[in-house]
Image (tube, rainbow, N blue to C red; front, side):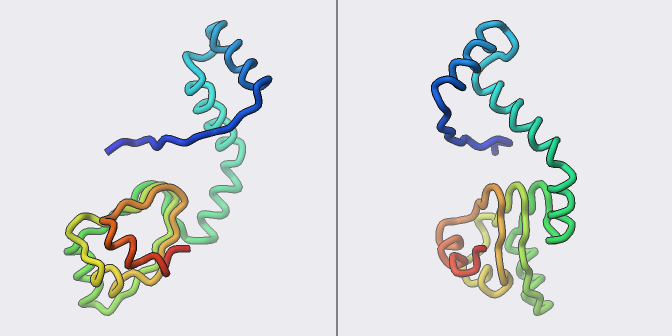
Length: 128
C-alpha cells in the first residue's frame, strides 16, 4: 500500500516556467519535488488551524482501519460509530455491506477511503 496519492494540479504557464527554472538551477529535483515541498510548507504554516479543527471535530489524523472482527464486536455491543479521518480510512475486504451498515453511522474522510466497492456503495448515503 502506497503512502502517497496522485493528484492533478493546473498551474499557469508563468508559474510553471518559474518552477522549471528553479528545478534547472538545482533548487529542486523535479517539479513534483517543488510541489511536495510547497504543500508541506503551507501545511506547516497552517498547522495551528488544522490542529484546532481536528480537535474540535474529533478527527483522527493518519490511518484508521476496521476489519470484520472489530466491526462484529461493535455490532454485538450495539455500538454505531461515526468515522472522522484526515488521511486514510480502510475497511478490509472481509467487511460485508450489511456489517458496515449495522455499525457505521457516518463517514467523513479528508483523504482516501479504501473499501470493497459494494461496501462503499452501501455507505454512500452516510458519506459526509
